[in-house]
Image (cartoon, rainbow, N blue to C red; front, top):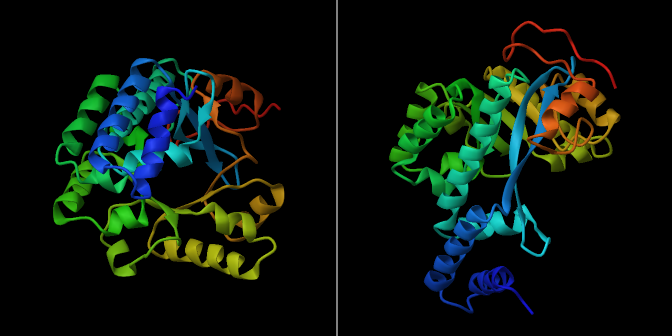
Length: 298
């Protein structure tokens, strides 16, 4: 028998195809997300990021996971876009931010690691007039320093917002929260706008990173993005790095940071300490600070 969650998934897909009423399905999906939170079906995993040259750990990206009551994993590329169709994204987004900040604050208090955690922020979340207060409240509640939180925004989310949303981003940046422009090169970038948005780094989409070894055009794009970012005094993160050869290309192009399976698959919050003890990453006392007893075993 198809369970309640599965029916909601099916109904939501039907809505996107125009065969159901959006209001009813959206309200139902909001309730399913709320139930998933209450039942602890939602969880986070954390994918490490490291310096391309030194392998120094520079942060983690928080990624949401949803395990249904029967043990089935609902892929994030299914449930996140579903949530973004309506109000469920606010509920899911707030839970994700709180859980990520709580985990990072826990690592900090335990002396495990002091690096930023990155959380994806959708365009719909930026439309929330209460976003700034919610985020600052989460930081205060969890005890995470503002500089230890990075918000990742897509080009579409960053460049298509209202004046109020842009002001919210400036307020968050002024509070010390850091920002990264995600999936750069896949949307509709405006270089004029890029000069005015408060980001500290560009993130190169994995489709270019994974193709650059065999595709001259992809390699040229990666090299050009790195050069553009550095000319604007921005950092560059390459995601989807899976091979040593891809890392060598990124070193040749002077990319700053890598993320992907070559370094590590996403880790549970409890698995972070084990990863740091076993893998060849260097952990600093402070983000960007002097290294403390480098852990280079493994």
